[in-house]
Length: 156
Image (cartoon, rainbow, N blue to C red; front, side, top):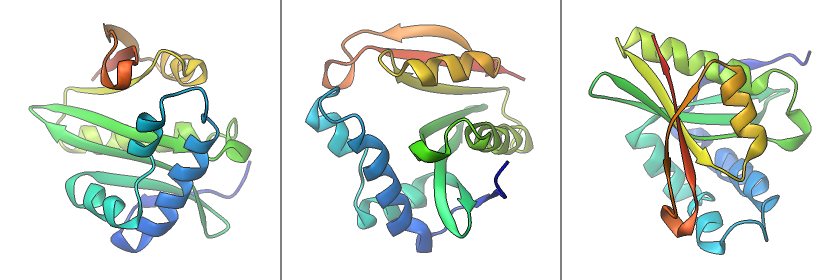
């Protein structure tokens, strides 16, 4: 296991998080519409906007951000967004650690449930969420950029 630190992201992390999203979504080039990729690869300025609207947690290994997830509380539910882990660090417990942090955040804010959405094409993400106790509660067909999206939730 790598030495891992999970912490709340700050505006100072915006550039590094932006680079991580670019790296992770570049792996999907050719598999998803270019518009979707651009929307998931914020530049530093856009990332600072995201950080001002939602709480983000980062996974840090050897002073480098290798994973990230955002979340917000609305109407008693915690919505998690934009989870990404650098390919070289997948399968090492980083996604689980980030998800645990989001669950703790949700519980600390009296959320009754946590939910995610993901593309039906991201099979590893789907298996990960199911393994972590989430259940599929819906599907949005031909949603943004024509992508089919699965909705997952976990009740507390």
